[in-house]
Length: 200
Image (cartoon, rainbow, N blue to C red; front, side, top):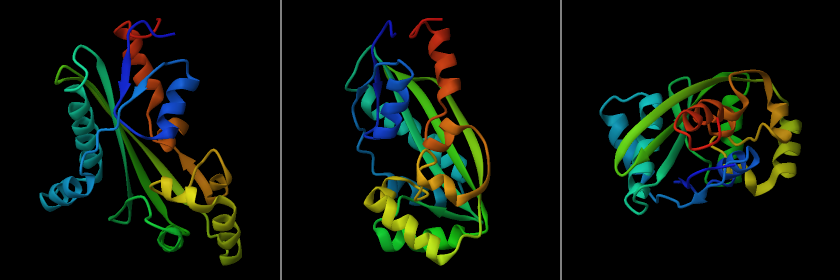
């Protein structure tokens, strides 16, 4: 049960569902930040994948905060780094296939950042990593997976959803389940309780 309103600066159905399933009511207002330009600029300046996730989370929250005075705005972002290569959401099924082939048998790191902004002021932020070890799956399994999941595979930066058939991709996962889904939910709720935004 929430005591004050919250805005999620995202169009992500997964992030909204995580909050709503936890009993936290949010209004979704996508930030429409040009993420590609920001990533290119930050990478050119030598920023890490972690720093990019943190920066984008705050930029999204800042952009939406201007439209919601007096309200806490949640910004979130996730980056994927595999052997120094950064990956975004695949543009189509063919790209998803190639990305998953690249991940096969390797470990990659997900960086999930979340930030709270109110009236243009950053109140809090956290970045929580997860290490994903993709198993050495067969080409036949990959065909099955792509056919089973379909176009929704392009909604995830890694081309998988741990809550569905994507769980079969992995040998091991080290990190928080909610972080893998794109939102470090437990530290976020701890912050919200501390500020009496949700009941302590």
